[in-house]
Length: 324
Ligand code: HPA
Ligand code: ZN
Image (cartoon, rainbow, N blue to C red; front, side, top):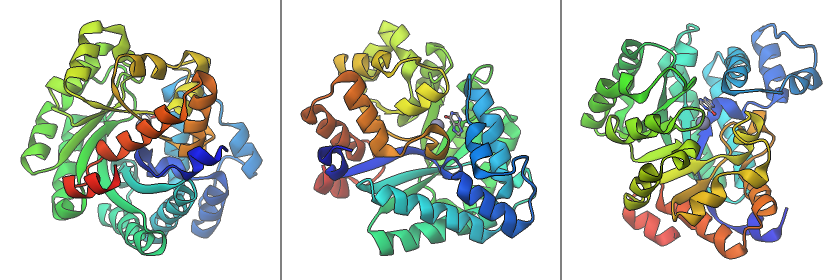
């Protein structure tokens, strides 16, 4: 890893905490909780990580979550991610969590939240990493489920900065969640949504116009629509780009063809992130490194992307200004 990338202070804005569950921890938690996994070794889990598309990944991602049952599990998961990220020069992180992936298995919202939240507090003390928490709705489930999850989150309003939208994109357009996001925004939550990862440009328009998002997660397919690119540029809309994720899920077949190049050329407000690092073979620095190598990015551009990550964060303006 180049010293320059390692030393760059950065914020991570697109990380699913459940996607940081390394196979070693998956096995340890399965043992601790008496959960039977359909693999007999860590190597067998890793060998299963070959995905043709988003859905193939999601199937394993939800299966992996089955070992997370107790508050301590969410705590250990989160603290391990923070320690690993701190080693990558991450100074601030905005973590997605998927409560419906847990409440649907009988794990209480409070168990999930308390474990993650306590780790974020301890992580800040131990490592100096600041953080925000973003609750994601699973878009393959009905909007009523999302609304009930938002209700449950109201008790934790002061500790959750925003809401997001993830899981299977195609066939689940943003407009299905218009009322949920309107209610969330009314309650003071900021908003983000995965859009244009696999879905068409219309879904990115939907995230902007129906959900009034503050950032777009991925946004790759926005490049197919010149008017949308112009809109994203005019709004200085941050995109949380995740190159190794795109490579692993078949969004690009070669990183040399990654849309980051065109995004930069169009003056879009891009950041680099890991998405689900335990599944996609790299934490944030590996994503910077992969793009540097594939696109020949200069230190100046890499530095700008790292500054973008703080500028696009949900930190307050004063804290941001001190870090950019
Ligand atoms: N895309 C959509 N949903 C997700 C992802 C992703 O990459 N990771 C976890 N949930
Ligand atoms: Zn994601």
